[in-house]
Length: 501
Image (cartoon, rainbow, N blue to C red; front, side, top):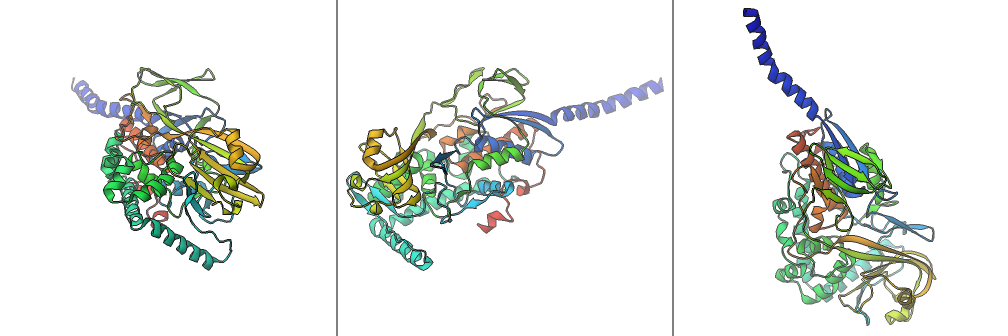
């Protein structure tokens, strides 16, 4: 009898331990399906691998409806040369993107690099066209002497200051305050919370108020001159977001930051960041496979594809804008209505017509032509991508509607090749912004692109993806099982790249 009691006591004592151990073992595995292979989807895969403990067994499937990865980071070939067709530039303080390139071993193309075929817009002279003439133009001097370039750069700065005055300094202060607040997202994971909503994420960094007002309202309250707002700032927002200064303040401030110095790109194409992250993250990649439905079946999600296949995952992540894709959700989800701003990118190999701009020669046309907000102007910008010779140049034209041949024949005196791309590029920003939830169903269906209503860039997608990865791990495992104790395991290397910048 005593032996039986002793045995029962041992069983009762060990039962919770056995049960807990079994439960822990079951909970150490996780299957994740990611819809979209752009920078958002590839970053989620990367951060899941980066943050998960070695004991966690995580399987990741990534679905891409096209035949190549990268999403809106795409390239276009014009006359045998390759150019950025989508997201083309990154800020020097885009630390996740910088560290991705280092992790994967990609080559960074900094400003004034020798190659001129990467679709960069930050070299050369600049002009603002109002449909009748150039209201502002910088100087251009063709020389290979560095000291002459510095003199010209100084002279152009003086020209800007002469026209726009101290408002330029106030504009820069607004941009720097916004960038400094954004840098909080790179703080150590030990002190940085995991956010369940976009509102929480923005309020924590001190950025939420900028989404409640238009950029124009923010600029006026900051004391900027109407001339600077109407000309230079409008040109910047039209180029970067295809919209006027009526966009929400945070998106506008991010747009202004994207016009500064030190901008960079990945040599050979920014899409390589997505490809490299997916390869490095050991995912099961499904190209040419569009997800048509996502159903919550209790303990798992069932994803059905255009190929007639069905996949089961404990976690589903949507990393593509839901605005223009046809995915059926069961049960249905509810997100605020939003429309995408379409940017029409027209690539032309030929030569601009100087008469269209009221000029005598093509050499007088700036390398980058920006336009003010006027419904009668047919394009937002025209930029030189590559000068082949005196009679042949490759240009990129941004416009809000498709450029018809008759219009292009007025703008260009020669057109040897024309390629048109219609991008659902970014949200149409309207203040105050209303955000979709990160968690679409209150369970384990996540939406990376909810953050795009704040600002849409490659880096903001990576920042949102990092939070989504931590959110998945914390909600599934009860905490984020980091490999290392701090930001050593995150994409921001505090001891190296970050400090060098």
